[in-house]
Length: 163
Ligand SMILES: [Mg+2]
Image (cartoon, rainbow, N blue to C red):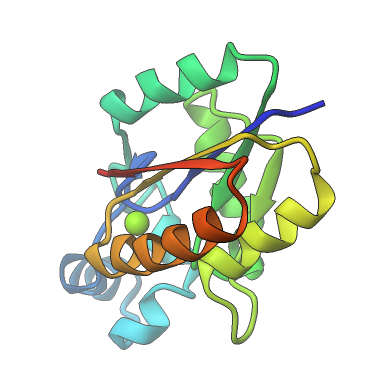
């Protein structure tokens, strides 16, 4: 029975993936393909390790190892990328020996916290949730969600790590 859920973001949390400005320029150079910022995040080439040198974030990898060694912990990847990129994301994570128990991708009209609430419906014995994410907007949303959840459910402690 899992007691803790540890939730890792993908882009610039577990791995250092390219940002749109640089990434689009590079994709234009290598593939002669023009894409917008918005399209960039949905394009397989944004995760193409023949175009980009995508590196491991060693600090977060160390945290991941600690969580992985705890048998009571459910390891979750929670990303705003679409599941059309699932293979590409899992390939990159596997390359660095990162394996999670659950992979959650963008779901229409849902926030990341909605996805966690869905998980909490499946696992009843959770006492702790820990989150790693690099984006300020996500941290803000998580903080609002944390207040609500902790006041409704005294059993659960939530820790949010800004990467
Ligand atoms: Mg990120």
